Length: 182
Image (cartoon, rainbow, N blue to C red):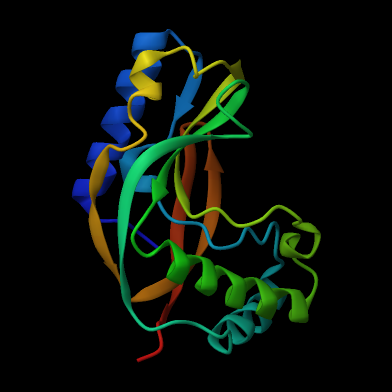
């Protein structure tokens, strides 16, 4: 699922500004690549793509909603951050329910990286990955952004993407969109 260009720009700028100010070694996600991940499937052979699409088409989902992107966070936490992310406030429950339906459908199918996922779902946009664990708590720029609002976007579908790894970073190819329940 993709946020609006305005949200992508605002979120990417906040991340870039904080990484520069803190002198962190990090790989920033390009604004055009920012997206909400409901589930990571891992490597799927082309022969199984139809089965994956069938499972996703039958996944329980939610009616269209609006997601409000606000605040920053870090995985696994701000003291030893490996990932900086923008959070979802309004629409977080709907996004979490949608992710739960998608993950349940994929687990029933079997044979994806979702099978071994044990962490609870946190609705977010990944903004950057730190090359080494970073202490963000002491960096005022990041610590003061927990309430920064980046915008709101309508969510009317979820998308199956293929990640293509290149020397310039990952590129995401849309394979199929699945409209939300009406």
